[in-house]
Each structure stands twice: as C-alpha cells, then as structure tokens.
Image 1 (tube, helix red, strand yellow):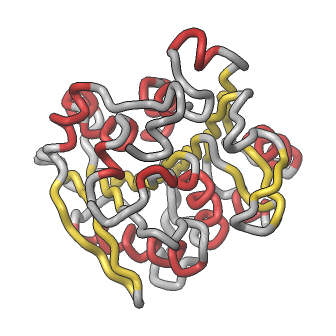
Image 2 (tube, rainbow, N blue to C red):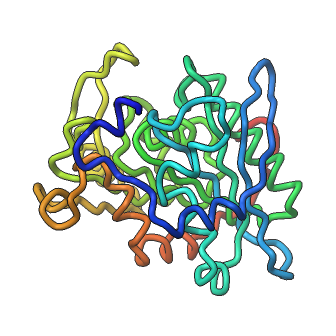
Length: 268
C-alpha cells in the first residue's frame, strides 16, 4: 500500500473505471534520452479530424507499470466514457513519467510537446483542437508546458501551480483552473515547494494575475472549504474527482479552438 492510499479520503477509482481502462492500448514513446510508458484511446468514430486530449497524471501515479496513470483515478478516462464519445468523439493519450522526473522539468516539457504532435499526426487529429489537462504534478507541469509550447486550444490545470514568471505567455491559451480552497498539499495561494527550490503560485493567485494581465478566456472553479470532505468524503486535494464529473468545464474545453498558424517542431 502506498503513502497516498493511506491518506484519509484519498480518491479511489469507480467500478466503471476498470471497463474504461480496458479501452486504452499500451504503447511507449521516446524522445531524446527519455522513453516512457503511455496509454492511448483511439476513438471508434468514423469522423475524420477528431480532437486529441492529453492527460498528465499527478505524483501519486508515477512509475513504470504503464497502468497507474489511468487506473488510479477516474479522471484520466472520463473522455473515453461511451456517452461522451457519442457526443464528442476524441482520441486520448496518457503518458506516465518515471521516478526522478516531473512534467515541469525542461526535458519533460519538450517530451510532452513532441509526444502531442506525434500522436496528433498518427491519428490525423484536428490540430486546432489539441487539449491538455492534468492534476497536481500534472497541473503544475501543463502550466510550465504552456509557457513554452502554446499549441493547445484549451487547458484545465486541476489543483495545479506554477512559478510566478513568464505569466504573459499563458495569455494565448484558454484556461479553466480547478482547485479546492482548503487544499493543503497544493495551496491555491502562494507557497514554497522544496522540489523546485522556488515559490509557486496556486490557482487563485494565477487567476488573479492573469486577469490583471488581460486574459480574455479564463475561468476558475474554487471548491469551498470543507465541501470535499463533508459532501464527498474526499481529501481536499482530490478536486480532480469533481472536475471529472463537471460537464460544464468539459463542454467548455471541447468548444475551444486554436487558430493554426504554423505548428511545427520549434514550439512557436
């Protein structure tokens, strides 16, 4: 049993998640000196040019089993749900990083970017509809990725954070932040993170700063203190559970489109 499952209220997958996980195929993707396990869902729809969704897991799912990133929680598989696919068919990729890595480090940022373009080409995806979402370490990572590689039509960082630098580089990406007010693991305010040896700002501060900078497609859901525990029996950090059930945020994401200029391997 891991340290995460010993935490009272830590989210566990639902019974139907096992069935959705079975729809994902195993693969691996390598770029540079990094090679990680990856799970992908290829839509059965006959439509051409479907969206591609990238999911980045949190620190509780790192490893080499190529299972935990989709099996540990429901959130990675929500867009593979049959009812969703009937209305919004899409392809999904969910990589898994190994011990000692993190989505926010430069080599992994580039890795995710190259992986996204590679699978978009493989699936003949709609390049104006590349979406990215993730929780905790995944939310932190995707914000770092967006600052360097703004190719995504929309992003949903869940209980995420970022360094208070280059915030203007997030202005071109529609973002919906999701966080619990009383999250003690990743605060929605400003806090110190030993891993980064720097200060990070959580979703509430990110939202305020981006509004001040004039972001014109920015939303924020902050779950009130005690709601996670009292209504759902969950640890406040597990706000990804509520995001996965939130049709409004998912519909919003799938309605975003990015004007394509020239997406290529420079990241610009």
